[in-house]
Image 1 (tube, helix red, strand yellow):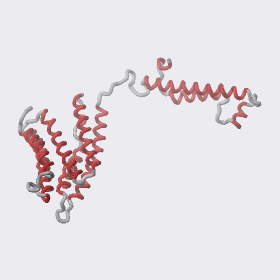
Image 2 (cartoon, one colour; image 1 turned 60 degrees about the vertical axis):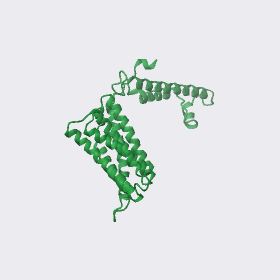
Image 3 (spheres, one colour; image 1 turned 90 degrees about the vertical axis):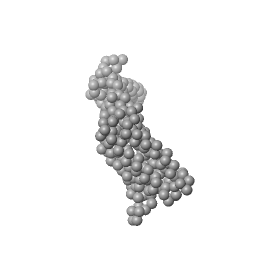
Image 4 (cartoon, one colour; image 1 turned 135 degrees about the vertical axis):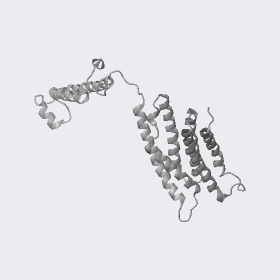
Amino acid sequence: MSLNWPNVLTWLRIMMIPLFVGVFYFEKSWVSHANQNLVATVIFAVAAITDWLDGWLARKLNQTSAFGAFLDPVADKLMVAAALIILVQLGRVDAVIALVIIGREIAISALREWMASIGQGKSVAVSMVGKFKTAAQMIAIPMLLYHDPIGVFVPQHVGTWLIWIAAVLTLVSMGYYLKMAWRAAPWPKVAGCGSWRACPIIAGCNAGVAQLVERNLAKVEVESSRLFSRSKYPGKTVEYTASRFPLLVPMAGWQSGHAAACKAVYAGSIPTPASSLK
């Protein structure tokens, strides 16, 4: 672990979290109830500034490191999660909003870790939608923390709208990252499956369906032939069936043609390997 200025700022941001949470639990002689919102807002704003500053210093001083790249997003997510939980407890944010945002952060962090482990980390790099989500979120949280009206300006109302926008963008960006990961992931391929039409698994399943249809139609043909051979209209099978039993299949010729049509629907356009018909 390399200890440089960017990493020091990241560790400082992590150490601010218990101080930030403790503001709402300190003795009133330390922080008055009237000043709790202001102090919490200032701490969160300072943490947000250090988030930008440590990244800028890392690039400016050429002090980027693997540990810093790991720790920086962890610190951000811990601070945001702590703020949302506090806001839910204070009744300023709906629990569903907090669940969506925190759940998405955990899921995408795990996704990025997995994609990096298989050498596809760039496939889930930060998108523009993700940046808009972060901007809306980082503006909304201080407003919701401050809460108190400033003249005609009510931070709670603006913050509520922004946090809802952030939640919607959270879901949109999660869908985007999942889509990019799905495309880049090295999914296992079945031999011979260059396309779904040439896949032996699909062809075998369709051939089985076609055989099942043909066997069932043959049974209908046999049963209908037995039925009409004992009827009082043995020579008028077609006419009698059409008038009295329109849902049966009385003729072998029609049945054979129908079975062929069913086979064409299920397997006609898909090459069927001989091994799948055994």
